[in-house]
Length: 151
Ligand SMILES: [Zn+2]
Image 1 (spheres, rainbow, N blue to C red):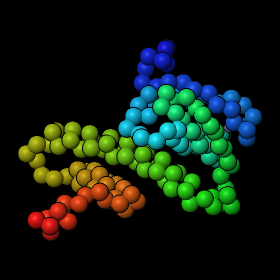
Image 2 (image 1 turned 45 degrees about the horizontal axis):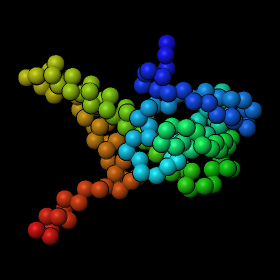
Image 3 (image 1 turned 180 degrees about the vertical axis):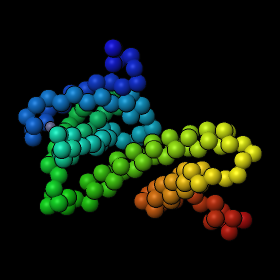
Image 4 (image 1 turned 60 degrees about the horizontal axis):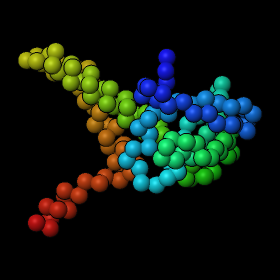
């Protein structure tokens, strides 16, 4: 298998907590659409997924810096870190939401002409709920209401 030709690129970084070189697969599109470099990429690693890992990555997806911290209640004091961790989780939720949307569309296609079903409603609610959650966290960029007023 050749990683370089796929969707991901393999990078290595030295972790002072594990005292080893870790391998990480980065999505080649990770740097797309960003206007500040290096950008931070957050994830958790370790047997218990309790090592907060912040990689600073440049536009060529080279790792320029590494910060690692063992997660515990005591050291989650940085609001900035917390926001980034939440952002990371939201990315995961967004992926799930997209999966749900695909399922939802597929289900709708299958059930054309039939009554609404509980699973269909569930999928729709999950999609809407995540959207609201994202808006709450990052603020809705939708200014359509203001625009209507000024018209
Ligand atoms: Zn490590």
